[in-house]
Amino acid sequence: MRQKVRKTMLIISFIIFPVTIWYFSPYLIIQAASEHIINGSFIVFIAMLVFSVFFGRVWCGYLCPAGGIQECMALCNDKSAKQQKRDRIKLVIWAVWITGVTVTFILGKNDVRVNPFYMTDHGISVSEISNYMIYYGVVFLLVIPCLIHGKRASCHYICWMAPFMMIGSGIGRKFKIPQLHIRANKDLCIGCKRCNKACPMGLDVKQMVEEEKNHKCSECIQCGACVDECPKKVLEYAFRWED
Image 1 (cartoon, rainbow, N blue to C red):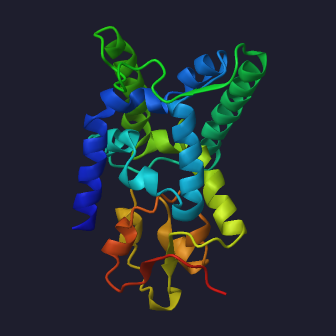
Image 2 (image 1 turned 180 degrees about the vertical axis):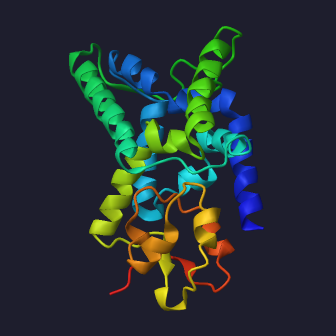
């Protein structure tokens, strides 16, 4: 039941993406920074960072419109995307982008202002036919990696939002801040690997359980698919760190 609700939430998020897309735009942050405007996407990304300190990457698993797109693409290519070195691509993209935002803001003009609805039409992102060219371009950018490389490939390789939550999650873990995570009792594991098959991120959950590293994985999106699939209840959600 939980996974049906989760996927429904992701699909709804994707459906309303034309309304919300500018609030996830890396380009609009740079454009707004040149005018010393703190815009909607700036506020959203900071909120993601803070939210992830306490809830990890729940956003990716339950609410992200890009996640909704990728859930649909899994019907076309359900193999697991290769990880490791390719996962670093998004970190490089993010670092270059953040540098660009910072430099643009430093060189910008005017007094600093806050405008959450910057470049929207009364809060709606895509309000003109011409804007749909950008919208479909972004959707195409997110779809292609999934079709070529497999499930959640865009999350792994190119997502400009994930690093915010990876940093926030890392802060939460480092300082032992109460944070939602997947806890495991490896003594109960029977090695069936059903958790691996269920994981939309293609993670080797069984190995992480054996090595007691499942709560440390920065690519885990806290979707709970492994929790719901485990026949022995080895895995469970937890909101506090063990001593």
